[in-house]
Length: 279
Image (cartoon, rainbow, N blue to C red; front, side, top):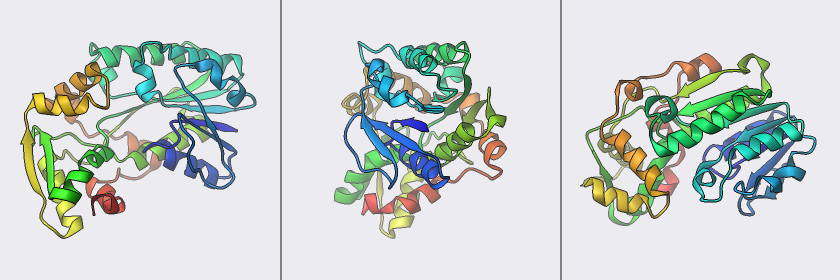
C-alpha cells in the first residue's frame, strides 16, 4: 500500500490516479474530505500532528510526502513524519521539496525544507527527493480575473522561469515510488522553456481564443495578494526568485527526461488541459 499526502492538490491528485491505475493499493491523505478515484481509500489528516498518521501508515510500503503549508505552521515538526515512517516500517519515502533548497539555501522556507531532506536522507529509509521549480498551475491564481475581466495581473511581467507541469511531477513521483532504480535520487524538475508571465497570459488567450490583457503588479501589490494564502516568508522567498532568477533557476533540467524518457510538457499543454478554469 502507498500513502499519498496532499492527495487532492495539483500533484497529489494525478499521482493518486496514476498509482491506482498501476494497480497499487493507495491511501489518499488530505486535510479535508475529498473525492478520490474508485478503489482508493481517503483519510483526512493534519500533518502538523504527525501522530495522526500512525494508523494510516500501518502496513504501508511507501509514502509520498508533501508538506506544503503544514511545513510552515508554528506548531509544525515536519521531521516527525519521517520518524513516524521509520517506526511504521515504511520502506520508501518520496519527498516533494523545492528547487530553492539548492538555489536559495538561506531563504527561511528553504532552510526548513532542507532540514526535512536531511532527516529523510539520514533515516535509513529508501528515499528520493523531488525539487521542482515554479509550478505551471500557479497560473490558476489568475483564473477568476481572466473569467471576469479578461486580465492577468502579475509582477515582473518580462522575467521568466521554466515552470513545470504538476502532471510531470506526479509522473516522476510515481516512478520514484515504484522503481528501485530511483532510490537515492535527487531530481530537479522544470519545464522545457523559460516563459514569462506575459507570455503565459498570451498562451491562455490563445487557448481561449479571446484577448487577455496583462497588468503588471508592483512587488508590494503581489506580496499583499500572496500573503492571503501563504506565510510572509514564503511569499518573500518566491518573489525574490521570480524578480531575479539566478542562472541555476533559469536552467532547463534534464531530470524529467532522465526519469520518464520524454521531454517535460510545455506551459501551453498545461493551459490546454485546464482551460475550463479560465472560461
